[in-house]
Picture 1 (cartoon, one colour):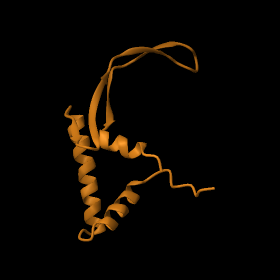
Picture 2 (tube, rainbow, N blue to C red):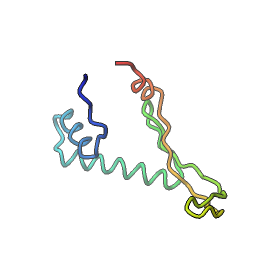
Picture 3 (cartoon, rainbow, N blue to C red):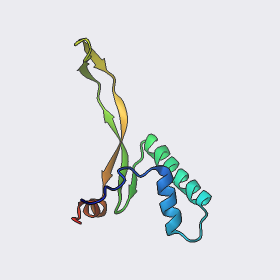
Length: 102
């Protein structure tokens, strides 16, 4: 039986992986770049802009209309407010890489 791979790559794991692939940046510098990238994507999407990284995917916001729902504990009908949620659409190269058979 094949050894199971780690199911989750944490932010710390990502920083370690990027640091090991880059010979010039310190781990602290890589962490700062990762933090700035996540911060920039979050800031732009929260403003209503899309962030498109060619070959990887697109981060964008989607508005969800108000709707009626049901409280599962009581069965009472409740109104669920409209909201804006973040979405990610994978790019073709990313989809192709994930879909490859090993």
